[in-house]
Amino acid sequence: MKTGAQIAQKVQAQYQTADPVLLAQKAGVKVHYAAWDPCTWGEYDAHTQVITLNTNAPILLAEVLLHELGHYFLRLNGFVGSRAEEEMEVLGFVGEVMR
Picture 1 (tube, rainbow, N blue to C red):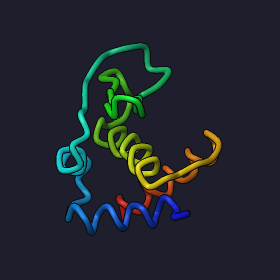
Picture 2: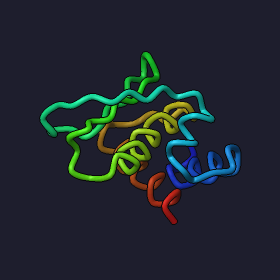
Picture 3: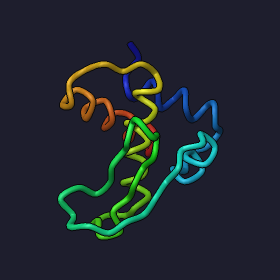
Picture 4: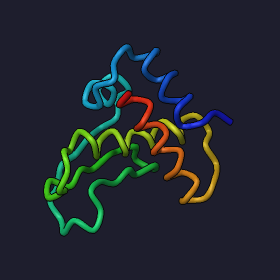
């Protein structure tokens, strides 16, 4: 199974960008915006393949989008693991894209 960093390299090569907004557009991922108490900053719904970003997040929405795209691309590439393992691989994905 590929790591989050390896998946990020593949995604960047395929879509020729590290911009999270362009990655979402080119991959056909729908992004919605909503406001809620910031216990979470974004959500990826694997069933609908929609990312919802919390406009009340205390960090840049582009960073939140990149994190949620990490979930999308990991699952698209067959990731299977615990929630904690997935979060670790998503961090690897984000780190690689932001390099």
